Length: 453
Image 1 (cartoon, rainbow, N blue to C red):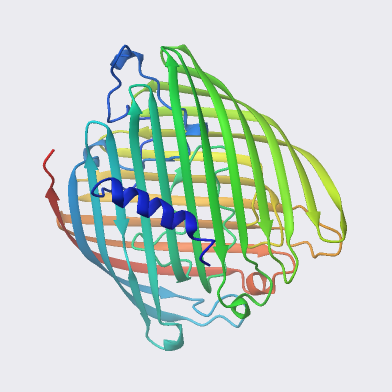
Image 2 (image 1 turned 30 degrees about the vertical axis):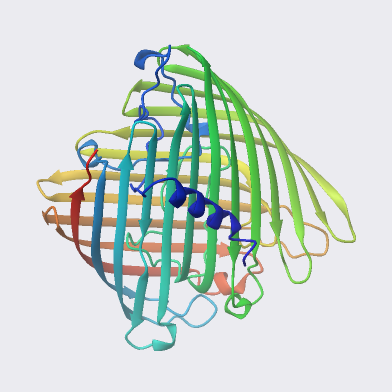
């Protein structure tokens, strides 16, 4: 596992040696950069990196919740009831679980840098199935550095260790909504299985004139099941390397048009073999920013894939790569949604897949101290079949609804419901009992300390 997490280590070492850390839940994809450009490019001339090529998630927070330069700590207690705590491979068993989540978050912005950091270890105890007791890890780092008035570098990394797909301080099956090329979770979930996941991203953008910019992004991901017996040899380790470059033009004050090239190397490790898919795609994208809090994007282009497996001939596929996304923020409403149709990594399946995926997240302040939120995702995975291997195509549907009561800035209570339904051919671990229903209540206490600028 050392090579699989080398990128995480490199990012952490680089970040921690540069400055003191900082944090926020999600970096705005369509917000004016915190570090102003100078030296010939004023605030009216600044270009934003369009969401299809930014590599960042949309913010699902109210404008009144956006803060910077703070230290935040706290603890969350979680009580949950699930009707399928042993996973889908056996007759469903209901049980109650109790979790404790200490949390730490830091955010610091200077004239040239913005550094965000969060860490949340978790401890979960089951009332009856005590053999499922677990410890979890959630770590995120996001570092942005303005190398010059026109050049910005960004490094991001997330790491998660868990035995339960539902276990996180936010009780979510996915962490955010992204409008980027190929940025989708295929949502293939073994509800109860030890797993380690790591995703790192490095990017740079250069605004070389008042209305033109270029940039690149490189993303590395790894998924590992330490105990293959927990997934019955039907879900597998995987890894991915994705590199893209783009050129964007501001054709009007609020309209961006650009082209991008993307290369992917998607690997799955079924048994002793390796299934590898390499893709090349040429993309045309468009972004409309009617206000600083609203973003609408679309992209489309051809994608060519070549799939290989030892001792078998190479197979080829030409398919469309397309998608769209939107984000909207106000003081009382936050909404983000995206759809993508693309060849992506299998994320546990026997190989890469042609995926159609929709993701949405909405929050609404319904009264003073009360917030309602819903989120959901649908993914259809059409696995690129290689001769001699089983077809594990299928689909997943997940949805959550929650209501939060904030009694004061430090104390809040949340209650909610999550449902997961998934069907995958030749994966009995999932398809034998495809449904999981979960109800939960969380109680959170946190403190916030402002940091000096």
